[in-house]
Image 1 (tube, rainbow, N blue to C red):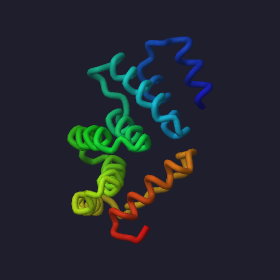
Image 2 (image 1 turned 180 degrees about the vertical axis):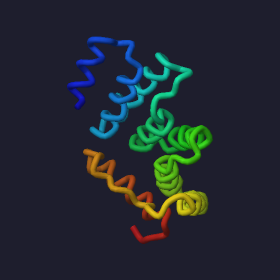
Image 3 (image 1 turned 90 degrees about the horizontal axis):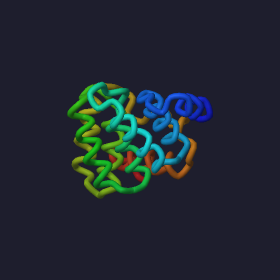
Image 4 (image 1 turned 30 degrees about the vertical axis):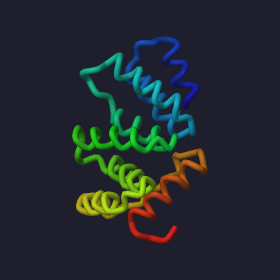
Length: 147
């Protein structure tokens, strides 16, 4: 898929949705720096028409880079823009947990439980095992489970 989107961007470097999709694919592939760069390019090309959930993707990328303060800021903004998108809450809960802010992590989990019964999602799309474990261990901490 990365090859296809790269080809599309070579044909049309102003394709905002292509840059967003490339960012998501790079995030899944374990390339958070490229993910941030590509999603930010998408936002620059189309600042008014939001494609997907760019703030969540950027927040997730910072989370995987263990830059938790920056991740938290992006994820909180993402929740303001799209309060029904559960993925933002999951990453934010894991982020708070890794920051040692367990009360806030548990409060986010409580908000998440009001929206869905699926607190721990499938993580098969995340190709980097360290990223999977960082995310899942954060969620386990937020849920009050032993690590």
